[in-house]
Amino acid sequence: MIEFRNVEKRYDDQTAGAALTDFNLTIGDGEFVFIIGESGAGKSTLLRLLMGEEKPTKGSVVVDGVNVGRIQPAKLPYYRRHFGMVYQDFRLLKDYTVYENVAFAQRVVNASPQGMKRRVPKILEKVGMADKADSLPAQLSGGEQQRAAIARAVVNGPLYLLADEPTGNLDPAGSREVLSLLEEINRGGTTVIVVTHDAPIVDKARKRVVTLREGSVVSDVEEGGYDNA
Amino acid sequence: MRNLPYMISQSFKGIRKHLGTSLFSLAIMVFTIFLFDGAAAILLNLGNFVKEAEENVGITVFFREGLSEQDIKALGEQISASPEVRRVKYTSAEEAWENYKKIYFAGNEKLAEGFADNNPLANSASYEIFLEDMSGQKMFAVWLEGLPGVRKVNVSNAVTGALQNASSLIRIGTVVILAVLVVVAVVLIANGIAMTISQRQEQIHIMRYMGATNGFIRGPFLIEGALIGLLGALIPLLITWFGYPPVVEGIRNKYVNLANIFAFLPRQKVFAVIIPVSLALSLGIGLAGSAFSIKKHLKV
Image (tube, rainbow over the protein chains, first blue to last red):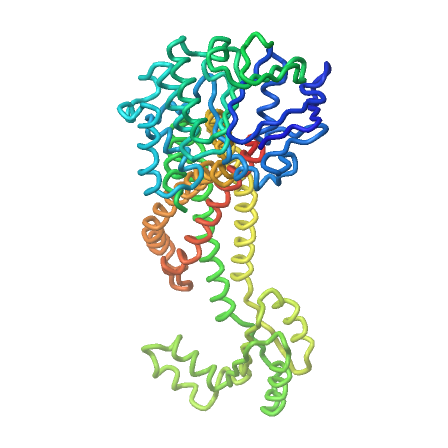
């Protein structure tokens, strides 16, 4: 479970208001949540706090009972292994094949070569990229690249999948593909948090929608749509 | 350990991506270690010369005319008792004459027979004194001159003094030049690593979010520095390994007199010192450059 408790986040160079202020949000295990809101509403700060890259100025971020702001730097990598991250621009390693990109995530967590050989093809099969395992990212469409990136994000079996504008660079068909993949992963028990501006996928999914404005939650609707903003 | 091959491959990629800077760093490393190896070989040999000289060159003390055998022996005991003295060798007047004959009447022994019972070196009984530390030779000679019954003290410290001076001069010069070169090498390697870090910022960010440990992220950069360092040591070590025997031979042929007095150290003995120190020095420079850059540019 993820809990933001009375969180305020103010950056050192921030002259205007706080990035997050009096921010409270609870996300239960296995949920699928869309976080929407205009630019500067605090969505990126929320992800950075969750990943332990930033510490709250006030309040606390608690994940599975652990106060993220108090995790010792040496233990932070192990905490982060509970998360998988998907980006708008995919961020695949350009000179690595699809297989190598996914295997890289396994290498980072020091997985055994045998485990890697077993797990990577299985995940690629799951995201429908088995036949593109030897392709370089530049040889793939946007949708394919994002599916490869999702495979990389989930290959280590994270409890939480964070997707930052995962459909931002995709056409509607690609977006739908990615959404259905995220839904499938969620059905497997992974908590999925999607930060997005993509109204059609939010409306299509009819999942929980949390709307941020100026660093606070202004609406939180179960089975909501983009117009909740 | 499981990720070591990955880290090494990443290091080679880093070196390849900024090959110009890597080669320049390597060239400076080669020059630095070559200078060190050369200076170390010279200093080790000079040290050996000084040691040999100290072992073989002593102070010679002669006695006043008419001093009895007993008095000479008493003086010898007094000298031997000094803590500075390593050993004392007594040469009687007869032995001195015998030695003289061997050197100067070689082949003309009959001529020497003319002196028969009249030893021309009758007053040449002497003690040859070898000290523990040659640097105290001058002071010790002054003390010897003050002893009652001592006629003359011969100090032959010209050679060892010159060797010691040359040794100090080379040592100081080498340390100064090495210090400058080490700083230049560290800065160059640090620059190369900084370039790799900046090229890999995105990859580092992704790795960090995947849960990569600091060691996993830093490893390739440390190895990159270490590789340049070690490669920079290997080249000059090979050059000096193959260059040492002909250089020594050349000096021997050119300065025959010197070669008769002093023995050059064998290659194995010189390299038993040079190899580990060169490798440690170059590894240290490489790792220092990497660590400097990591600390400055890599937030993990």
